[in-house]
Amino acid sequence: MDSGFASALLSWFRVNGRELPWRQTRDPYAIWLSEVILQQTQVKQGWDYWLRFMHRWPTVGDLAAATEDEVLREWQGLGYYSRARNLHAAARQVVAAGGFPDTIDGLRALKGVGDYTAAAIGSIAFGLPVAVVDGNVYRVLARHFGIATPINTTEGHREFANLAQALLPAGSLCSAGAAGSLCSGGAAAPAPSAAYNQAIMDFGATVCTPQSPRCAACPLQETCVAFREGRVAQLPVKQHRLKVSNRHLIYIYIRCNGYTAIRRRPAGDIWQGLYEPLLIEKEQLTKENSQFPISNFLLLRRGVKHVLTHRVLYADFYLWQVGERPPLPADYFWIAEADIDRYAVPRLIEKLLELINE
Image (cartoon, rainbow, N blue to C red; front, side, top):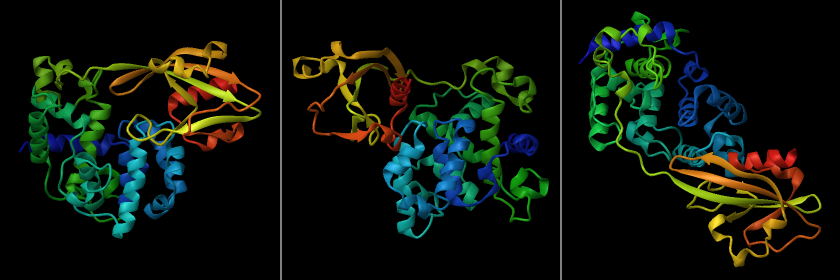
């Protein structure tokens, strides 16, 4: 289709592509791990997590042999914990199958792997000619080609996926030096899709950014429709968002002779599988909770705000110090306070524990 677009991106990538540790290998485990970690996560934050996971579990078999609690604890702080649970489940799928699948359909069958992740792993690890489409790609394509179709619609998904695939270059790229470090070390030439996919993702992350894009330094400026028409800030287009709801939580940290009570959050709600101290939903603060007289507890912080994708949490933190263990709901259990770090908790509870440690 537009070979000049791909050529310009690849030339830019040869000089400006980011040096990332997972780009120094074709190991599908290392590549898959990086892609899962970097979903909803900035590279500078995800980098350390990738290194820690690779150090602790250097192979997919090692990760599969871990417990879910161990994986969640190592993941703590990254958020979107379903990614960690899916990561663990997919590792066990791979081990059960005898290795990573090398087809797009096979990769999509792994827990937590969608179209984008399958395309990224498939193109980089196995050389499959499949284009990636993520937020960076939507933005670059929408601006360069002046596309106003909303990216969060079925029509938009189809239009951008077809365009991205049509732009994917064919032929060898190493002879032109366009794939940067992927062409070094005497390794077999990478597939064109691997270099191109990484080029457009890097370009969207560092030049064609959501806010304050670097249009003056853009090698595609002359052919960019949005720049020519003054529509850079208006593209890409999204339909109206889902309504954001508020939720009010009351957390009570119980301290009893060096012990505290926690529970593991159940399925079907936020933070599934993570641990938390005694929780009372504000709407449930009625006579049935009269055994927890919060007016007598030490208020540590009120109205702590925590933003999730489609809801905003407001939490009140209390400390309840007692000499005898009070009766608690059946799903709570007692642990030594010194052992609390062994349990994976959401970021909101990390804030509570920081207050307790103070």
